[in-house]
Image (cartoon, rainbow, N blue to C red; front, top):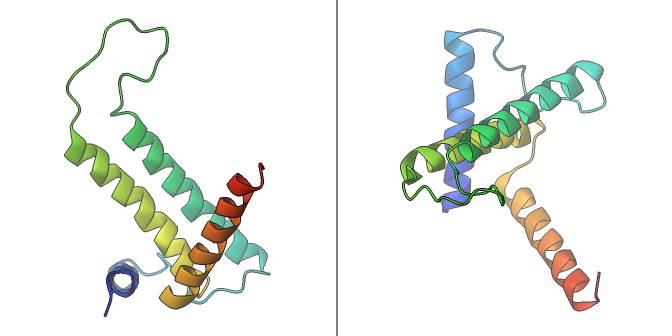
Length: 123
């Protein structure tokens, strides 16, 4: 099992475990993306992921262009933990809609080719 497959497996195991301990945490998957309820669930997961990214960004202190002083300390481990939290919500969303590791990888590679072509072609 490669690392991406393992990540999907771990996320799915967590989702099942959470739903067993707190019924209703997740609907049965894959969800039907055409249904209103499924779209609401997927949207909520995405927003939770965005919220976690904002928590990660809260650890960055030197991004303000008008700030003259620099804060030299950043807790990289806490920053990374928040990024992982965000990723887990996004990965849950991917699992819920029934995307498998190979399909996700192919979509990633396809998009990577497109963005490289855009740079090459002066997008």
